[in-house]
Image 1 (cartoon, rainbow, N blue to C red):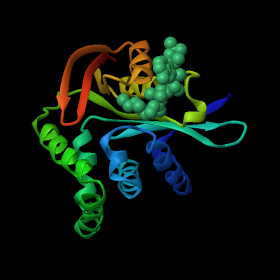
Image 2: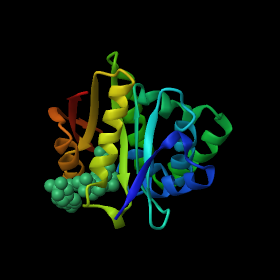
Image 3: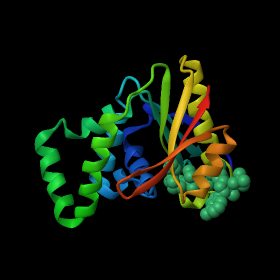
Length: 199
Ligand SMILES: CC(C)(COP(=O)(O)OP(=O)(O)OC[C@H]1O[C@@H](n2cnc3c(N)ncnc32)[C@H](O)[C@@H]1OP(=O)(O)O)[C@@H](O)C(=O)NCCC(=O)NCCS
C-alpha cells in the first residue's frame, strides 16, 4: 500500500464527506452525535487558524485512507458546533430523541472540557482515524507522527492525547510514537488514559 500525506487544510471540498465517513469509525462522542455533526465539525476544523492535520491518500486509487487532527485548543473546535444556533438546535433535538445517552455524554464532556486548562506551547492529538480496510499497516502511527513533526515545526513543545483504556490499537500506535501514560480517568461513559510526549 503506497500513500501520500497531505495537509488537511488543503483537502478538496468534495473529499470532506469521506473524512466524516471515516471518522464515524471512531468510538468517541463526536461520531455518536451522527454524520451531520461530524461533517460540520470537520468543515469548521479545516478553516480553523490554529488546528492542523493530515489526510492519507492512496497513490494507486486516490482513495482517502485516514486522517489526523491536532489543535492547541480543541474545545474551540467543539464550541464552533453551536455557532449556527438554528442548525445546532435542529440537530441536537434529533440526538435527544434518537440517542439520549449521547446527549447526556455531551453535557458531561462539555463540563469536563471547560475545567481543562490548556498549557501554553502544547497541542492535543484530537483525532486520528484509519479506514478499517487499511488498519494494522502502520498508517495510524504515521498520521499521528505527522502531527508531532508539524507541531514541532510550529514551535510547540508537548503533545497530549486521550485514549480509551480498551483501545489497544490506538494505545499501541500512540505509545510507539513515544507517548507515556500520565493518568487514567473517567469522563461519563468513557474510561481514558491521558498520554503525553515531548516534541
Ligand atoms: C487507532 C487507529 C487509528 C490505528 O490505526 P492503524 O493504521 O491500524 O495503526 P498502526 O497500524 O499504525 O498501529 C496499530 C497497532 O495496533 C495493533 N492493533 C491493531 N488492531 C489491534 C487490535 N484489535 N488489538 C490489538 N492490537 C491491535 C497493530 O498490530 C499495531 O501494532 P504494531 O505496530 O505492534 O504492529 C485505528 O485502529 C482506528 O482508526 N481506530 C478507530 C478510531 C480510533 O480509535 N482512533 C484513535 C482515537 S484515540
